[in-house]
Length: 218
Image 1 (cartoon, helix red, strand yellow):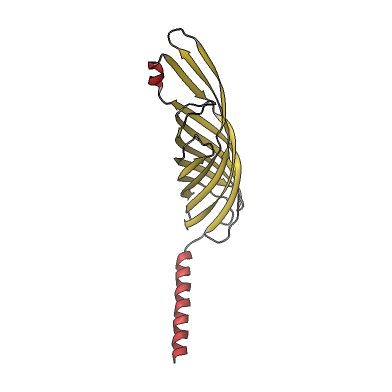
Image 2 (image 1 turned 90 degrees about the vertical axis):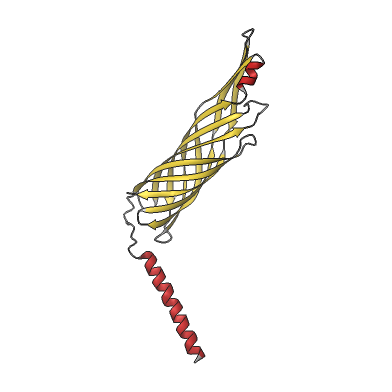
């Protein structure tokens, strides 16, 4: 009698699992031709490799087009800004805002109807804007200090995973490492005499980023 009861409980458990799984995938279909496109929004965290660059939050938007089930092209724009500590070899204390425009190619592997991990790599154009800290203090001492940084080309590679919560809605986790060097110039001018000196600065702007967001397919 006890064995029979246990068997009934076991069968009930398996039936519940089957019904639950069926309810998850009921009405869930993904096109097999792979020709999908869409828009994504995400938020993340950026960790620069340089000691004088602070970690910061990031916001991004991306457009993508799937060439097939395995390959996808993505254009992503991100914005983040972080504090910069004074570097005796060049860059001064201030705030550096960066907008990377990254074009990627992804290789995707569907391991289930809902889970699709991927790896990717690509090239990017990094828009840089630097705000010098303590400008008024320098002017109070009789000096005008300026620093400007150019936009540069960089590279990136990474991995991630898409999870379909609906046939046209995806939750995404993305990790990537970006490699870039930013170039700039500085000048220090004595306000009274007008004597000026300056030079060039080149620093690595490599960083690791973690992001999570949502994508909409159409």
